[in-house]
Length: 321
Image (cartoon, rainbow, N blue to C red):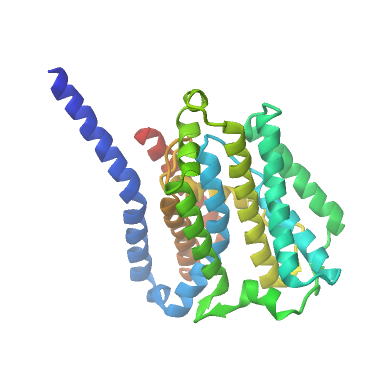
């Protein structure tokens, strides 16, 4: 009887894990099919490339958020990090610094802002929600102070920087290429390297991971730095595409990023998740937005739909847990 009960429990666990892995992909396929049926323009090459370019910004932020949520944390400051790193990079470019140097500086700024989050959370023993809520406000305020509340425009006409957000490589928008490169690097880091196993271990049981000799503070520093760097990369793409650094850029982007991570199957409780799922989650949100635009649905209703999707994803996450 006990063996039979154990077998049933194992079967349920396998089904839950299979659902976690395949559920988001099935949802994406169904969504694409429905949108295509309602408007065949959706699958036109031009629209699909435009969709991928739109998705790239949210996907990059969500990739970094995946690491954070797997550790059992959250990062509400990603939108403000995007804005501040973008504005500072624009200022660096305006000062005449070469674009390649400015781009690397922007990424380092984002990583430093993320590292600050990690330090506040680990050394200050502040809950991630509260810590990043505070830094979200601080970073946004610093952006407004630096820009004096006005967009920074016309700071670069250099081909290298403009290509970053507007260019094409073999017919593919360069932001999509950057998304693919970031995905590949972070996939290996999370799923094929020791650091990834440590990240999952901390999210699964931090006390047990500490006993096992894992230095959780160092891992958290790194995951928040990754989150900050990915937000900065997204900010650089936006800044390049518009050739303008907006002080309000990235507002509420943290919501779409968290939604993409959760829809993709990463547990808000930590310890479980896949970066492949996050990419699929970002594609689901992008397809929703793009499809509703093609169907002429009001942006007000689009927010309602996105909110419903997030609630469904969280409820499914709780059921699977």
